Length: 331
Image (cartoon, rainbow, N blue to C red; front, side):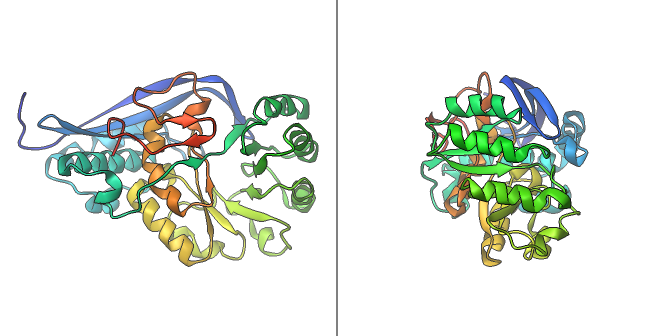
């Protein structure tokens, strides 16, 4: 075994086919493109995965370059704490933050939750996503998933009242949450919220575009509304208190698990309910997010279930139950 006095950092782009396609209001895709960071030294290695998000101007190539630019800092002993100031929040920092945590846990012979002094995560029920389509197509997809206790329904603006009614008819027993992905307008906001409330939807995610969501503070909301694109890290929480009841924490937005855990604490202190969410990615992306689940009302970590194949040592899914990672995967 080759020994090394300093940690080495490497990164790569990986592609995983989606089972079918994944469609939201901004478009469809047929593969998950991830960027993996790996920190290694003396036979130990730590990994982290991210999904750069075009919505925020991110690309896999730019994320890869941003991670590789940190090689000298990692070799000089970059810590997770120093990383928070060394890179801006976003997907690239997420991959490196999670790789450093994984490496530190393995070096210490501890699980990540013990290392970070957090509760050990248990099994949780994850949402399962129904892609945007016609009411008929969504009802058909929902019928196949109607045995699942929690469904997340992608909506897209015009025709959403018909979509959600068709979905509810196809899954009369499932708890429903809705993600509009910024596709509603002030003109249809109250009608669409009423349509969701009428069929017993529990939560609506990001109905209006980020930065144009002031109307949420002016209306009586008939059900809980959750910020996604409007919220990124702790600094974005306080201005949203009058507009939202919950926040969706995603590690690719916060820039890693370190900030995600701090954000969960801050969000709870401000009275927000918490959703822990994900991009379409492999179990390596979901594993660190499991550490946020003890604080979450809603768990949306179904990314691997939407793939044609997951990576080796992936998370265990039993129907809609998701289990904490084995150390062979992460942490």
